[in-house]
Length: 136
Length: 261
Image (cartoon, rainbow over all chains, first blue to last red; front, side, top):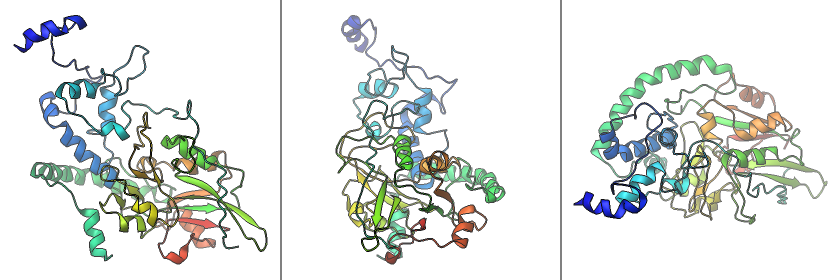
């Protein structure tokens, strides 16, 4: 039945299924089997996050940045898309499952460093001339 | 607060889950093997400014990261450390200096009697007994084994008690929704943040961004290293020259020390 409905609804978008279109990863294979990852990726990320933040363990195996680097999706401008784009790897599934995630309120949703101040006002508040009477 | 309470708060793992526990034990076994080369590496590189830590090794309690800032070399017109920090951690302003995030700032101090003045960079002082950790109701404010004081933003509820408790005004609250953060420096609305001593760089055996900038284009006033390692440059210098901690009277034993203050 699902496929019947899908055929009607998605016809406009040139798709033949309501199931999410999940972009393929860049590497050969994922760090775990696809089935395992589908069910347990949140556990792996949750565990890794505590290991990294609290203890400084920074293995790439289960790191969020590792996921994002391999599952990067490029936009039409050849720049990796952020989670603002419906085509983003994480969003493709989470939109479908109607599960909202908070990760990207803080974490970068695409790989690579960039100069955030390039087109923003620099936050350097110098000179901060706080008058403190200090020891000579 | 008794040390008992402190320990419990730091070590507590909220939301116990047996599956997670078994995974943890498996990981611990794996880490044990991996730890051996990490320990060996550290032994070799003791004389270097930054002790080598394998990426999969835990932060070592044998290390106490610290900084020695020579104010004789810190020019009041230079803010290379501030701009390097902003660039490294993706700090950007919203035109509201009172609430914009500020992890490191230049403070001018002057003696009204003599008129002499000094300019000093002030950031999180990475106290041995951090008041921000004492007051945190969720345990989000914590001290890592190697002495770095951090905010675990996953558990921070944004109450800002730590900002009140910090005698150095080192912490900022993120008031605005952010996007396009640096991958290594997650930060977001509703959480408190402060200097991490560039913990992502330290774990990668690199110097903090401010120190790198100061050594490169600044006056070379900042020295970063392991205060517990008697052979490190910083330990030799703090042993040889007089240095001060700011508000040493509070007895917090900050890891940041100043020379010629």
